[in-house]
Image 1 (cartoon, protein in one colour):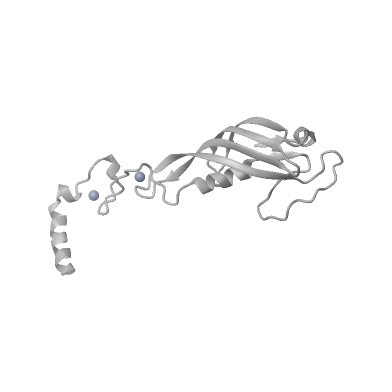
Image 2: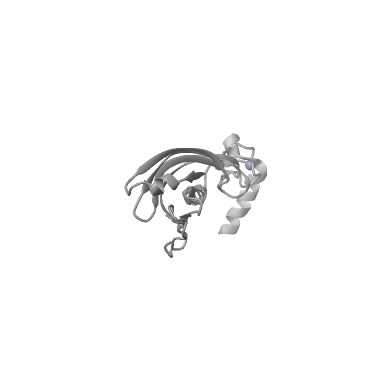
Length: 174
Ligand SMILES: [Zn+2]
Ligand SMILES: [Zn+2]
């Protein structure tokens, strides 16, 4: 996701360039690839290039309830400043702000969006992802995925073997 911004760095402050993004990257770092698509606008500021845009992508997650893999779609609203490390006219090294996690444009004037997109996407992933809002989860007795229909031991299906057990459990409870 690399953009050469040499021309934009030479342009007057306030100049903009629009780019279409369509690229596959590894967001979660586990070798899976996600297609990232959308538009970004690059704005030349007095000290940096400001990147703003909206990107759509998807990652494969594991449902926290039924443990099935599913594809989770997410939209990233990116807004990041990229600081040049080299002067575009002279090639001289330029100081960058002393901020942790600050993004830079390399000495060849290439701005790479990949890391920012990765970070934004990771923040957008829920802690306890669900394959769907009403995921029925797994049967706590037999482990059957209840999204695929009931199993023999569901409480209403009243498997006699389990009703004996639940009587015992009720006794214990008292
Ligand atoms: Zn699920
Ligand atoms: Zn079951």
